[in-house]
Length: 117
Image (cartoon, rainbow, N blue to C red; front, side, top):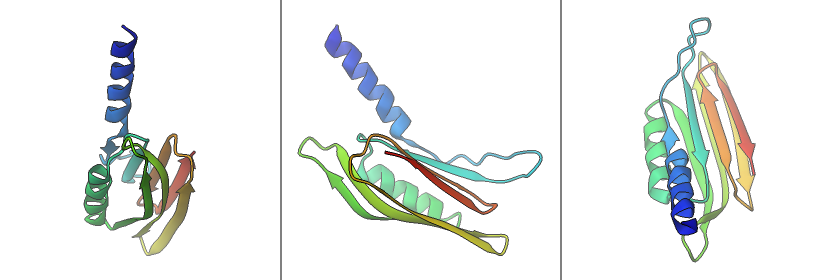
């Protein structure tokens, strides 16, 4: 039973790990927002897919370091995100040496926020 619960939790974390690139529109500000949640279960393939999808929306996401342990869990990240919209520019660098969960949020205001461990 314990193994089943652990498997369910890992699956749930993997689903959350996925990226939501859905544009969100606020009636008042009409901004598009992109959100990426990175967890130890995030794969390089998933992250590369986000990079390509965001690039089409003029969001530059780059990882200068993605370190995985022997079991395939992402343990360390380092990178940069930027957006140019409405004639202005926003960017941020990010790094986590003991990855638990990390969120990168970008909007076309433009605005960028990164948070997590």
